[in-house]
Length: 128
Image (tube, rainbow, N blue to C red):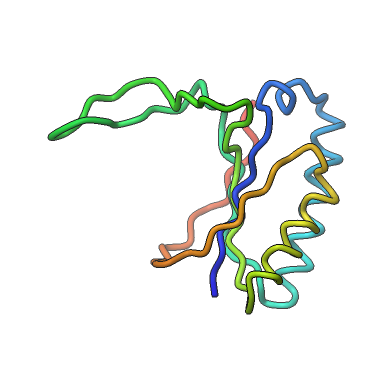
């Protein structure tokens, strides 16, 4: 079963990290990813750009493009991980492993009902 593990965080806190603090968290997270990949449970993952650069298409027809998202909560969705787990409990343990290396993040686990793999795309580098 595929699960999406959605990573929420207080964006201002993440953006306040020094380059060294950010690299330390990402190095630990990449180690978790590598372990999951090694056992065949890791799928696509993405660290999303700043919410101030997000746009939302909303409304009828072609929709209207607005700045957004406008989160009503303290945390914003900053990334996601797709994992292949046999059970919900295994997905929860996977999220806990991520939480251990990024303790101030909040992880939401959702089963994926439909998944279409796309073309391999090039790796993107960290925005400056």
